[in-house]
Length: 103
Image (cartoon, rainbow, N blue to C red):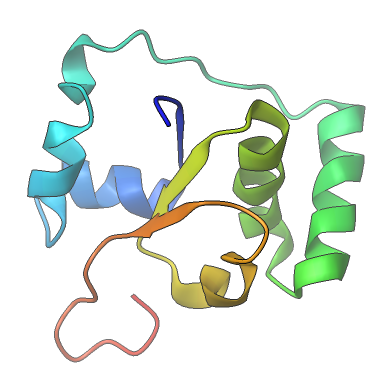
């Protein structure tokens, strides 16, 4: 799979050079990629609501998950709220931070 959806936790790990930075840096040389910011229009909001309902994740997280489904892309995240979603989409989890239960 060559398309990725990066949720906020993954981008923050990269920007802050935290645990998982090295993996983010290898996703096709992130800085050189043509990054597309997808606006949250009414359709995306509705799809996110359905995703939230189906997978019981926080609504904000549902935007990344539903976008990954719509784009047939892998989701890269450090947010382990997505653990139960792996049956529906390909997810690449960044490593947990030491001492954290949800990141």
